[in-house]
Length: 267
Length: 290
Image (cartoon, rainbow over all chains, first blue to last red; front, top):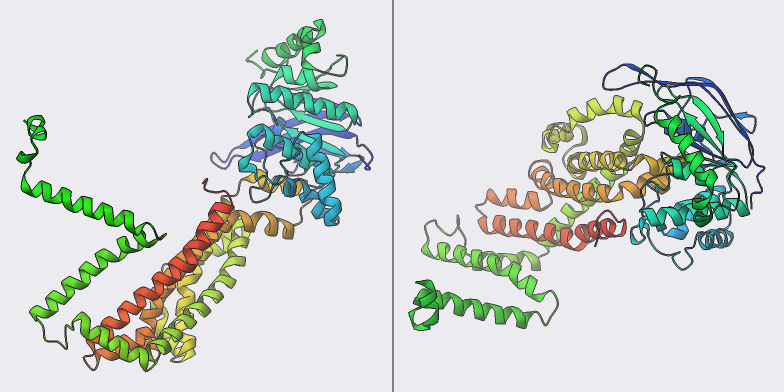
């Protein structure tokens, strides 16, 4: 599906400083962040809360500006948001006045595709995420899990070079989360693409990723890269029993909780 | 004591039994009326008004004031028929409604883009909000002297005054509506490649629409009030002029008639146009769940 060539991401010495509007103090959210993401890699970012992982994702999307360092996607510096970097949000962020199909069509409409082609593409992606027959429903008529499927279809239908996902499965129930994670794996394994996935769940990071970037506490930087050498296809039934799963989880948990990721002086 | 009484119906006080009987009859009437949809609600609305008219009639009959100061409902009705027949009511109502419509459209056309700009852009907000906050504190009617001097007596001056009343509620509600759109809806559109114009058309406008429509209804209401006041001073047609002019000839029947027409015209506009519009957008846009 991706007619666009897969992109690599190179981030060097990235810095984000902002002024807290209430205290008027400078806050260093990110400093000295280096990260390289290969084309078609599935990279998860975990780290303690406030470590700047969501800020980093927004900066990759071009929604927030860096105050220092480099961010290259496909060799080009990021200056503003664009259709080449799609995003899926924790709160779905569907447009409530558009039906499921219209939401998925939205990016294609912006690109100026003819209506018939848009509809066909939207329906194909809705089918892929298991929402055949729900094309004409409004978001409020769908469950949280279904809304997130629509949001996923909306991002995928736009064939971005990179898919940015900001804790996308954090606000659905546990069973829905498992089915969404497996859906994402099916889609990625049948058609790899570059995905940057922010999560606070070690289990989720281990299950999904090719590698996990562990961020340090504020100011955030990439403290450790942990490759996830689990077999594919990834399905919960098989992976839960795999001995390597538990090891990786423990390793990551230790990094996030006590080790390198803790602020200096606290550990 | 009460339990014992309830067992012996004969002991229920006559007053209570009477109330119960009236309630039963009222309930039967209600059920009967419900055969025609909306009729029961209509009767429930009109009945209290009918009581007021009856009290008015009774007061007029007692003649505390002379007829020319306190006319009876019958006199007003006769006057109403007369003015309806000679076209006065239609002429003055038409002039008033035309001005309201014109002032409303001008107010909407100016308030909407400015509201979107202020809602979206911080610099624009910082620049425009102080003067807007100041000018919205000035009632539309305070513009009457300048409106007359600048625009002369007539349509233009009154329309300007209405515009002033319509503009601010629509502006503030547009700003409020835009600012209440969740950030991530805008972010989602941006990451799909939306241009500023696409954002306005597909995110900001529809997202703010329920609030905008509420502002339109509010603005039309303010405009209607300003209209009647403005017409008393700055023109020689319209319902406001009609009732203010009649005062000079002790035409209290015309005054009361005009007040009734003013009330009815607004109710009809609100019930038939503004409220359905508001309900539809709010429901369709999913701000309120059915």
